[in-house]
Image (tube, rainbow, N blue to C red; front, side, top):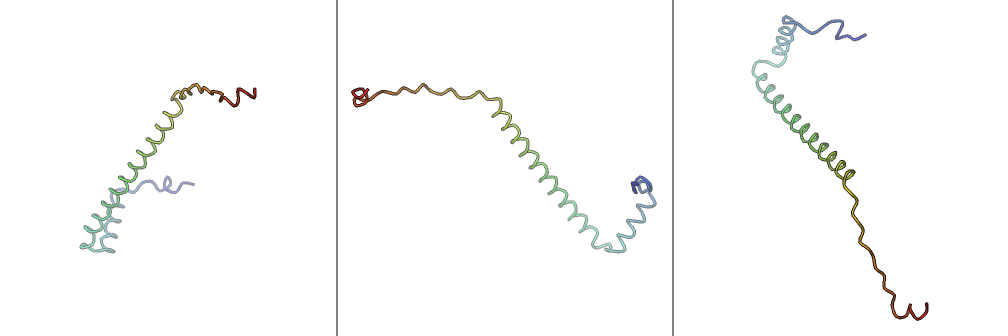
Length: 89
């Protein structure tokens, strides 16, 4: 059974209770520092995610271009017989 669906999303009073407990655990001086570090972490995560998506998109485009590109035409190779080969033939 899905526990979140059973209990539902926390309402306003539950959120206030959670915030109060966090305030008691960490104290008022630590909360701004924790918020800043959380914000920086989320920013770095988002940046890394975008870089990964860009690299995957570029790789996909490279594979698509390679698959749809026309094969290169091979140059006609002309083999000339040397004088020794003509005498033995």
